[in-house]
Length: 232
Image (tube, rainbow, N blue to C red; front, side, top):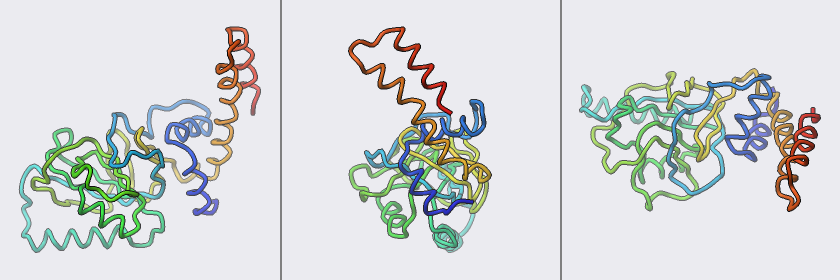
């Protein structure tokens, strides 16, 4: 597989829709899997994507935990140790098991500060985000919705497969996310990504350039599409 640092650098130049288009190129067909299926909210007003490898967990907030406070505190510390272990490019991916009726936010001022300090690349969750206007800049959380309280939020599982708005994610999966949502790329396709991304962009250029000309018409559109189709 290609150098991981170069992979992160290359894919960070593109938005998540372009990444989805690149997967279509790699697969040779369009797909209805491998990406989130609902709109999301973001902590930061930024187009910079989150790119890295998934560190997964599950949370719940609708009822008190059945464990003691000491056990809950221990699990929380295990979680922080887990997300920084053996991974240079960790993206935290957390499934809120109360979805679609999430009531407690794990993500707010405190956890954003902690995760940013631990050099985590960013967060993707189907759960809640709060403390808007108080969050440290430079750390992106892409969440399912916004809410005011943390309720009984607590971690229930670590290092486990999760589902984020229809996107199945396993620990270690390559994930790319921005204000549009998130997508994953199976490891066997990572080497093909740079060429596919380059091809997606090149094939759009003839159409975009033609469409933005003042004398654009249907005949020029046909020629532009043919020029795009000819690019291999």
